[in-house]
Image (cartoon, rainbow, N blue to C red; front, side, top):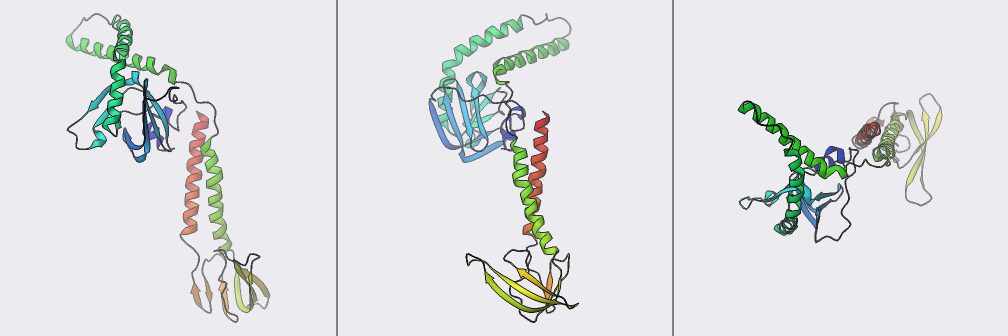
Amino acid sequence: MVMSVFVFRMEYSVLGDLERIPFPNEEPIAKFANTWGRIGSFRGTVPFFSWYIYPSGLGISIWGIGRVFVPADCIESLNEDSDSLFSASRYEIIHNSPEVNSPIYLPSEMIFDKLRTIMKKRTPEINSETKSFTEGIYSRVPEKTGTKKEISIENRRWMTSIDNNTKNKVSAQNTKPKSPKLNIFLVIAVLWGIPMMCFSLSAIYTRLNIDIQGVVVSSQVNLDEHNVNRHTDYTIRELNGNVIEYIAGASDPALSRDIPVGATLVKKKWDLNYTVNGNEVDDFPRVFYPLIGSIGFAIFASGLSIGILRLRK
């Protein structure tokens, strides 16, 4: 989902508030599924891209990112670079759709030819609409008075106005705000980030909190009700004479289940390691649990921050 910001314009991406127009309610002329493609700086390999050629434009579906439709009216040019050594940049589409980045690069000549065919059929219709619209704009261009430099600046201003008004006319129907939806980022932060952090911190704290210093008097190995996991029940006489019991289960925070009777066990509080008969034992996964906790924190922080930003919009 995050990769959508490299494919769609920001306001139409997963971080924006505007909803992309759906595919037209008509049968596609051709469909090219499970292929590759390139949009702007984003390139997806096989089989992430699927292309749909409609009489009214081009539909693009990217697995895991989303769909977008580029109307034929928004396509400014179709360019074929036969001298290009790389097929990734040979078939190019330049467009002014406000929803998706430009240019778009097609994966094959077949898709390019299909799209060029429908563009040729629509050219007279598009030209007549553009002409009638731009004639009204040009009729308001001020007379060419003043120096050559002043005229050039004024013309650039009016050409910019024409371009912007044309884009606004084409994309006016695409500015419908997104309907309120479940904030998926906050859900991910709560359902994934918090449990992963709790899982990591709980295991580390359980190991650090063990405080035993004494001699193992007896041990008994027991199996669980499914006869799969075993745990060892130790009876330990501490240095002060007190007798305690310690159960070493099958989890990582627990001490070894194979400490022999008569061994001197020293596990100080807030230490991950312990000693058996003076030999240090380091059997706690020092990388795994901190890594899980870090990933959980990253998911929680990013999900919370993005979720809050979307709520404020």
